[in-house]
Amino acid sequence: PRRQILFFSISAIIFTVLAVVFMQSIPLLGDGSLRANEIFDGRMWQPTEMLDFLTHALLYQHIFAPLGYSATTCYRVVSVVCGPFFLLNALLLVTYIDAKRAAIFFLLLSTSGMIVLFFGYIESYSLVAAYIPLLVLLLIKASKKQLHWFWAILAYLFGALLHSVVLLL
Image (cartoon, rainbow, N blue to C red):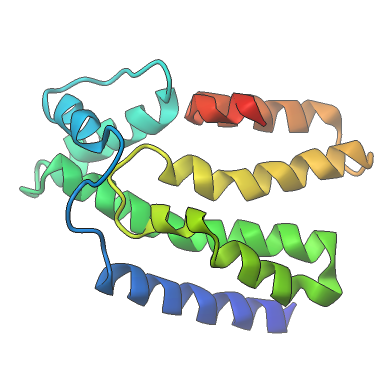
């Protein structure tokens, strides 16, 4: 466990520094600008990403706007903060699947295309992307009877409320 904590800590620090240094400067794809404008306009509800949108809206309304920051800055900060959570959940998942080769699997996940979501990406996928490895872990544990199905279903429903993309899992 100490080795894993050290490995995760070093990975999280390196990742966070890289994410800040190479942070995306403009919304490239998707509807990031649209979501930021909706939040700026005071909207609190988005049916396809209910909890994600609400989280960003509340953070913007109560923290970022009073400090004079834009809604896009809110998305960028949440994106970067989600990175270490993705790394932690990925580490938990790969360690559970194969502790002996966890480092290899961890490197595969942490260098996948999904990692771009944590470089200040202005979009509504950072929270759910950070959550998915944990959800997969819980579903695997439930399938092996190491976790009651109630908790796995609850975790799945939470993920679906976070973003509807979870319904495709």
